[in-house]
Length: 159
Image (cartoon, rainbow, N blue to C red):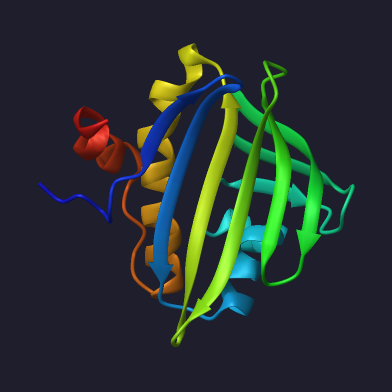
């Protein structure tokens, strides 16, 4: 079984569940930043349609398919180091996503933290984020992107 990178963690807190992933990516922070904060960058690995107004207070809209759209507002925009935004999928309960980038050799140490997730959402999000992190890693390495559902199926039982 291919794990597609190290496992993330899912922890329960008073404010909801927290998902954390740490990855060392094969690209400098500038390239990782572009993949996270530009519409074209996001469409290269996360979703087929994305609109990112790359500034503090800017809007985020990510359309995975006809039935799943994320909207949010950028709450932190510190180029090449930290990007955070609210995450509201299909108008449901809001949560928050943050990305922290630290240069590491020729690459980037990336930490993804998704907070305030209700119990009914957290279990599905953890293998989903695992798959998206695998796709981001592959895209930055210039490799073919793994199929989202293949990765989810491969890792779901580990969470």
